[in-house]
Amino acid sequence: MKSFKKIWISGAVLLASLTGCDQSFLDLAPISQLNGNNFYQTGEDMKNALTATYGALQYGGLYYSSMHIIGDLRSDDTWIPNPNAGANLQEVDEFKNNAFNTISSTTWSGHYQGIQSANLVIEKIATVAMDETLKARYTGEAKFLRALMYFNLVRIFGDVPLVLQVINNPSEGYSYKRESSEVVYQSIIQDLKDAEQSLPNKYTGTDIGRATKGAAMALLGKVYLTQKNWQPAAAKLKELIDMNEYQLLPTYAGVFGIANENNAESIFEVQFKKGSTGEGSPYTNQFAPIGSGTVISGIGNPLGQNIPTEDISKAYEAADVRKNVSMRTSYVLSGTTVSQNYVAKYLGAPAANLDSDNNWIVLRYADVLLMYAEALNEIGFIPEGPAFTNLNKIRNRAGLANKTSNDINPLLSVPTQTAFRLAVEQERRVELAFEGHRWFDLVRTGRALPVLSSLGMQAHHILFPIPDSQIEINPSVMTQNPGYN
Image 1 (cartoon, rainbow, N blue to C red):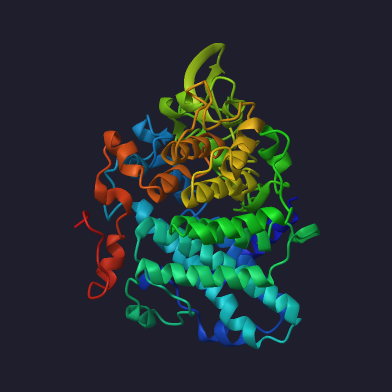
Image 2: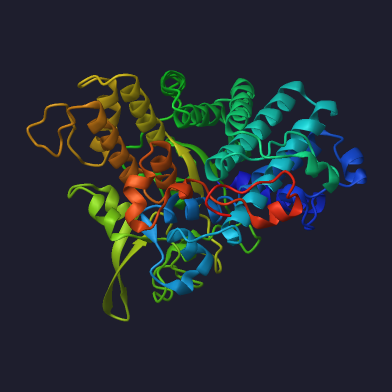
């Protein structure tokens, strides 16, 4: 279903007309008095404003680039073997990024511009005369998007400014300091609770792709899990499972590919639409190895920016059907086989360079089942209990045998709570490979430093540096994360 994608184009134009490019505190551009007072008059105006907020997910600082750079490239799953793929990305890959690295600045500014757009919807819609049910839904969608963006920011940077109102003038931004992560999480949780109450279970027609009740519940479960609030996490995820709104597709391959987008396993995707309109996704070109020409991408330049490591290639069990769907280990160029890993999940047929139809899946049902298994295990290890059941659902679809607490095969035996933690970590790694989860999973579970220290990670790398530009704008209140001074 591509219909919802098409309306993002007008939304992106709208957002550009409402925000400027001048650098101001938080990179939140001011809204003119004319637009602020006169634009938001009807329900259609609010629909366009909300569409602009969805459009922010396509920014380079969000799901166009930053979230897979941070989620995958920062981890042990992908790397940049060719320095021509980008110096700033290579610095992130090698734990050499500093406060001047553009990944921090584009991630920061992109998310706060999206938050500004969400705040516009939430604030302005209150006085618009329109259908009240639709008003509540639009508000819920905006709150979900704001929560998602803050969840990304707080996991990447730690304490961040919490801006819940529209900034109309750059001078207003100087009052915002870094808020504690706990306060930011409280705001995220409240937004998601509000969204859950006002969003529908599903959409039809041109609305497919918008945030649903299930998306709010899944993200809330992930927030609780990140906070190590095991009981609320398990309860919320179980509630979502019991809705029977989502399911594991029969085959792993059926989850991915342009023809399979917004399927019964998908909970929330960032929508892209090719066609030289600025709405296309870049992944086919970004992930094709440098030197592969058009053999993999079909058109445009292969950028080699997210190349699977040998470590993850070896992480798949021999019979795992997911490996060939997720990655390939060679390609044929001019009749010669070239041994080179590359990501296969986002192969498409671009209309032009960096212009494909591939969506980015943010939340899907397999993730929910594995999070639920993780939460149950933390509450208490139960041999062959529900945690095992949910773990094995994922394994069975991949063509793999069950893991049990006392299997005679040591590779399938999970006898303790600690062993189950590692089993979930392994399953999440291969099930969600190249979907931007690995780094955040390792940080959440406290495993990042033990796993990645051999790659150059130090303790302070748990957080990314605050962009130096933000500190220079407001040095009296903006502080740097430890280790980056």
